[in-house]
Length: 332
Image (tube, rainbow, N blue to C red; front, side, top):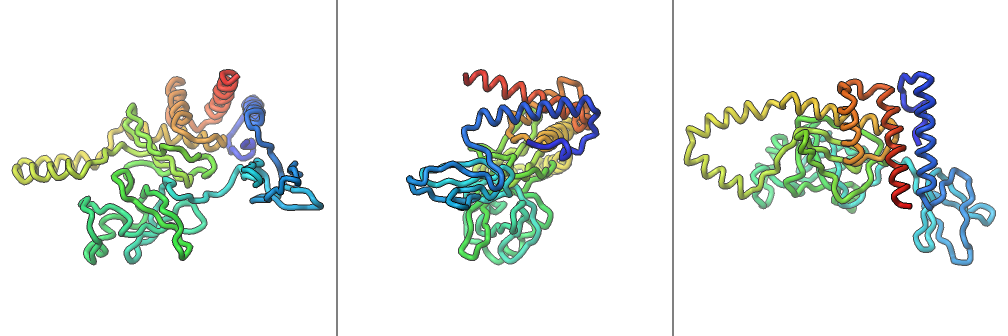
C-alpha cells in the first residue's frame, strides 16, 4: 500500500490520520482476502521438500531452506514456487493492448516508446493502411510513412511478440488501433493496470474514449467512431455523384473536426484527474473505479482542479474502504 510520504499532498494533521487509517484498513482487507503469503527479502518460504519443489523467480536456497530474494506474494503452480513482485516493471506478453509514442520513423518501421526497457517496433507491413485495402506495401507506401505516423504521435497497438533478434514487435491490423488524437496521455505504474478481456472503453455519457494500456500508458480522449471499409466505399460513390455539394460539406466537416466541444474537454480533464488521484493512492485501475471517482467528484460539486486536492484524495481512500468492505460482506 502506498505510504503517506509518497503522495506529495499538503495534508493537515486530521487528513493524515484519516488517510493513514484508511490505508491501513485497505491493507488489512487485502491480507485477509489473499490466500497467498506476503514475503520480504530473506523471509523463509514454507515448502514440502519431499515433493521435489522447483524454485522459481524471486526465490533461492539458503541452508536447506527456500528464501525470498524480493518483496512480493508467494505463488505456487504445481511444484513451482515463485514470488510475484507487487511493483514490477512492465513485462510484455503477446496480445497485450498498449499505448505508445512514436520516437523514430525508420525504414519500413516505426519505433515506439512503450514504458519498457527497450523501444517497440511497428512494421509497415503489420498495420492497416489508410485506404483500408489489403495489399503488399510498395515503395510509395514507404515514402508516405510520415503521413501516417510521425514523431511524437500517440498510437494504440497490440503486442505481436518478440522476434528472433530480441526486438519487441507490435501490430495494428484492426480499426480500433492506430493514431490517437484530441486527448491526454497519462503515465501510471504498469502494475496498477491488470490484464483484462476489455481495455477499450467508450464512456457514452461523456463522449470519451478510455484506453487502459497494459504498459501503464492510459489514453483519455474524444470518442472516435471506427468506420467500416464498406461504409467508406459507399460514401466515396455518393461523393462522386454530388461533388459540388460535398465539397462544401467537407469544408464544414473539416472545421468541425478541428474543434472539440468544451464539455468534452472538461470531461476528459475530469476523467484524467480521477486516474491521477487513484494512481497516487496506488489503487488498481479499471473503468468501474475510475468512473466511480468521477461520479463522486460530480456529486460533491467539485471543480476539475479541486479533484487533485488533499481532501478529495482522503475521501476516495475512505470510499474505497467502504466498497471493499461491502464486497467482503457479500462474499460471506
